[in-house]
Image 1 (cartoon, helix red, strand yellow):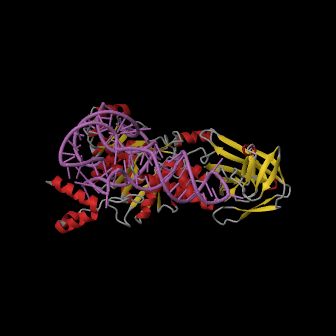
Image 2: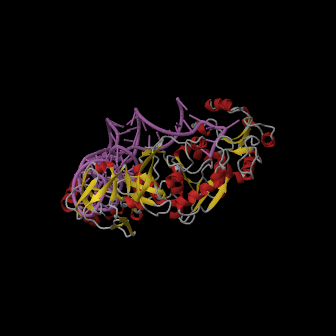
Image 3: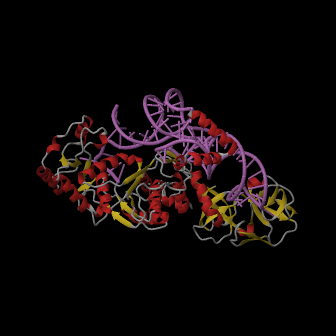
Length: 516
RNA sequence: GCUCGUGUGGUGUAGCACGGCCCAUCAUUACGGGUUUUCAUCCCGUCGACCCGGGUUCGAAUCCCGGCACGAGCACCA
């Protein structure tokens, strides 16, 4: 019955188009058309769930143990973009609560703020330093002990691990609030040393997910030998919150409405939700992204980069071989390209691996219209012109946009071309003349383009200087010498190197190669 | 081991909550062509995918079940 009707409907659709079917339906059963139109192609980022325009608070929370890296740019871009989309607020929060394993780098606080502004195109609406907020974390920890949903645990890590695996409660779990408060004071006054005790959140030791069982919220750090690098904090505190606790409390205090983070933090969400239940708070909406690898890059960790910079393997955080924001910016990748790149990847929870070519193509779109053309002759070979030709040439700086002219002086008749082109012998010097080369003489056979011989870039010797093209590779940096066109581009100008690619002027004779 | 998550062309991504104009979108890469006095830009075209196996249904990328693969968490790191 149904199949018959469907077959018939499909037949009508095929013969007369879908509108015919729609018309029939409208006449006979209009309610069937109520069904929502299928979602069409989506532009940009998906809608934020439960988001009210003007009432959205987001945060980006890096550890300032180094400047921002490529991956951080995702967090900044996505959170920042949503803040813009919803007229919301973006908080930049420094999660600087580890003074031992991931010690903050004092310069990073300012650098990260500068980089954030550069990337976002606006300044975060608020900056919060976790290390300034210690009294809040302590008072909530104390409340947790007073209200009996936290306890001071004196198990060693290994001991507790056994309890966690066997789903049994540890002996400290049933201490009274008074006992816990007493132990808490011993943590704070220095009676206990690092490792002697931690504060745990009481969840349930029989929870299916082992990661959630009575998770640790605060621990002791020896801030005498490892003071916090901010002098105003220094050795003031012994008891420091762990990320899950600190972040949970701070999100509550700041009124964060949406958390967008990596999916490696999914269990953090679950832990924090349990804590929020204890406090009677409502947890923010949470979204996740998956892991991103870049084909061309291996694994870089902030701490490893830091070591390699200190040992001299890299010149600094902006060494062009490094996957940091400053290195990318240094190589001429624009903030807009970086943002577009991350927005295109969107918010999927898939673990992906992307080629840098994708980022470069975004960059070209942003940059090509304004990139002056410049000639760089690798493996330069000098030849002498023979025949009739003008004294100088006026060539536009950009072929499609008016960026002014460059002038090639030809009075001495000496020009440089690449060795590789020299060997082709029959050439057209771009914007100039057809030549035939025998030994080191280039005979001009025509000023007008006369055939389809190869067109090559070249320089008049009078307008050329000894130059360097710097090519960062994975591990090394390659220096290609050659002749570079006379120019007065300021340092940092992004140029298109004719027939070679794009790069950035380091000084008037050095170009840092960016990408093809 | 336990727990959680993810599988759409070479690489990303849309579509999946509510099955049907989906023989599957867009971008990128590669290749080919056009414009261009750059191997650039721009334009056009071609190749190319629903993890596997069952099930439900007239109809499954979309729903259900079972595999498989990959990733992450189980830190006194963030």
